[in-house]
Length: 292
Ligand SMILES: C[S@@+](CC[C@H](N)C(=O)[O-])C[C@H]1O[C@@H](n2cnc3c(N)ncnc32)[C@H](O)[C@@H]1O
Ligand SMILES: CC(C)=CCC/C(C)=C/COP(=O)(O)OP(=O)(O)O
Ligand SMILES: [Mg+2]
Image (tube, rainbow, N blue to C red; front, side, top):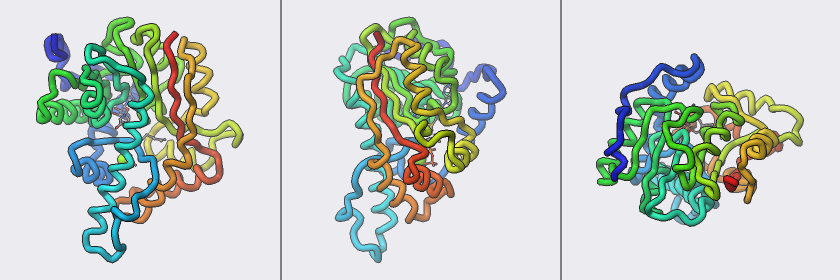
């Protein structure tokens, strides 16, 4: 059976949002078309809404006076964003082609395509945005993988998925829009026992005390609610998700932000990320957990 055999809800049939807040978030992503996301995605057709990790390849950027410099910087930023998704997929463990994966808060679907290309399996994506789901399904169809990669408009706190049907699931920069206890209860329900959950997220650092002014600025910019690192670990523990790896990616993401801050694609939020990562109030982390 292919993914499309059991489609009962076309991606455009948006149900009533569960809350007014979710309606706001659906509208936000329906109208998003920032060049920093679209021009990077145009590099190779993988459209991401997350940030990058890894060292800058200075040789690939060439001379600052190069007329092709902007194009090269865009390609480099995109390479770092895809490297971030690759690291997330590395942490899913062994996934068989017969398995189904879940991308909770899937955006335009770049990570889903990468997951299918790596594992050959089905990938289910959930987003609040009709525009994003349609975009992801169109891309998958263009790539000839529409039978395997499907985006749907659905609330990740009420996933349209059977209990224990998912081998691996993730949130890539999408968990700051929901209550973590509700979110992990739902991942725990759909994951098979022994399955793997992975998140890459920004979180505020309990060592700092409370969310800093920079964290508050990021929340206001994206209409989200960044959680603390402690909250992630506590909500996982309460929902049968046992951390196997907690990796601080903060030093690995700073080069991406420093490079992005030199381009014409800046959106105005770069300073908040750079300063909060540097003052220790905010961290970029990967957490991988086993469903037990
Ligand atoms: C910053 S984007 C991340 C997209 C994607 N994970 C990526 O890495 O490109 C946040 C995503 O979370 C989704 N989202 C937020 N709240 C959600 C909810 N309650 N249910 C489903 N998706 C949600 C948004 O629709 C959006 O697609
Ligand atoms: C790490 C944190 C706190 C993330 C918040 C969620 C978010 C908006 C991620 C990036 O989306 P994007 O790629 O659409 O943003 P931008 O336009 O800034 O690249
Ligand atoms: Mg982006």
